Length: 473
Image (cartoon, rainbow, N blue to C red; front, top):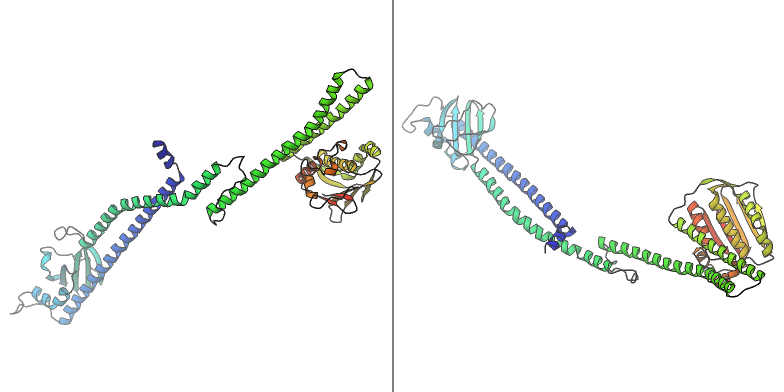
């Protein structure tokens, strides 16, 4: 159980739920603060507006009465100015619920005070503007601050005040409410987030489970869900593309292993048979020489196969670093043609060279380029019928690019087959002749080296029996 909880706490579900809950809580807190500030300011503005209007109304009633309150003389109706003022402003007091404390002064003489003020008098010396909104702190009147609107005009100073008890208690209740509902919302958001994360990640669980079932024996089975145009659908598409690449790579490795084993097995089998034949019984010296010569040829064939496999492996894994330098293509081709003179005589073919300039330079790795040219010329000699010409051309165009072209006679090859000639160990049935000595790696090596340099290569076969290889440097 503890392991399951530990696994859950480390899972994306828990982290997603936690972030969702914290974000929800943060939004709730921000919303609560905004509501708190809004209610506080709204109630403050409403109270200030009410108190201001009340003070202005009292002033208007007193002013319109045209009674000299400062020189008041008692009569049979009003024994004090306080009674007179109350009668004058009764309407203003009766219809405003926020007139808890009212004080009216004229020439700094208090002529009216509501009874609830008791012995407390508001200090009017600070009232210098027409309208002042200030807070008083009078413990004898209220445990809360008192908001007052102070009106000052024509020697009248009218103060209408109201304690902030209602606003304070309303905000306190709002705060208490948020303190109570915040944990409830947090729990609900966590539960809701857990449900949503489980629903959202359920498809991911299926992908994980299905991926875990895939091995080298069932790579042809791909993941379901590519039809969805969302993150999971794109993930499935990407993983299926990866599986297809892995499947193709494994199939290529398997085919490569089979082909390499077959090519290595043939000369090894011949070597074994010839050595067993030599050991069975005494033979003339000439016969031993024949066996040694044949074994030597098979050994050379093995060496060529291994060297080319080793070169291809290094090329595949980017283990070869090019040593680029200017190379005289004309001189390199001429030297290679001389090296092939004995093989050309044996095959009874002619190597014809055609150069547009006496010297044509390109920027390349000399050893790698020489390997390319040797492979191409060697292939042309092997598969060219006797008593025919092999034409080697090298030209430099007006745009500065150099082209190399080698043409020899051969059986026409279908266009759909031509790209496969670059595949490793691929050979046409007509070329599967042990006497030719090919293993189907020559053009693969050429293609890898050309691609490494960034050059272009193209092969063609026309209906007249011309096999053409073009290089563009």
